[in-house]
Amino acid sequence: MVIDHIYYPGRNQDYPAYVIRPKAAYVGPAVVMLHDRQGLTEYFLAWGERLAHEGFIVMLPDLYMGRKPNDDGQAKQWMNALALKEGREAVRMAVVWLRNQAYTREHETAVIGFERNGTLGLLTTTLKRFAPRAAIAIASPVKDLIEEAKEFHAAVQLHIPEKDKTVAKNTLDTFIATLASQGIAYEVHTYPNAKHDFMCKTCEDYDAEAERQVWERTLAFLQKVYENAPTAQAMVTS
Image (cartoon, one colour):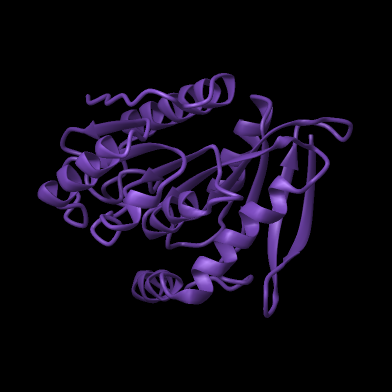
């Protein structure tokens, strides 16, 4: 396995990231993974390594530019700030950079994002020329994406904790209906009794069984998306 720390170019600055590859002489499907509000921790690097073991090239941008939040309040503040123009730019440029690397098979990418960074990942599917093949969002609010969903160009997978107050059911239903009306391939997985922080191992609401299911469903979705271009819509709930 090869792990490189790189900087990729933005319009106004360079952004740090890790790139994990199964081996040096390897060309394969590529994934951009966006961390949660705690930043680019060992947890996400471990996810990246697991995906690399499955044959994926994984890019993990550090959207906090090397900084670590002092507490959860600051973490939420920083994540909310990423929703502004700079965060969107950093994520879009990561997708563009990765698809142009010689080791990215057929210049195709996918995006996985956690919390509000999953929302940023979904927004990359509006890129006409550089849209990823798929976007996966985990515990991510979609209330601001109803109109943008009309411009999506990629398959979507959502992982929704049932008791997540940041994802209102009526908004989620409207978002899904919009995807369906546009003919976008999608999957929706819900996790009974799970709360917003169900994927956070250091949080009180961590749910190990739900995390296992997220991993298995994410991997299966990526494998399916890279095997066949998404042409038919589908909804999976559980």
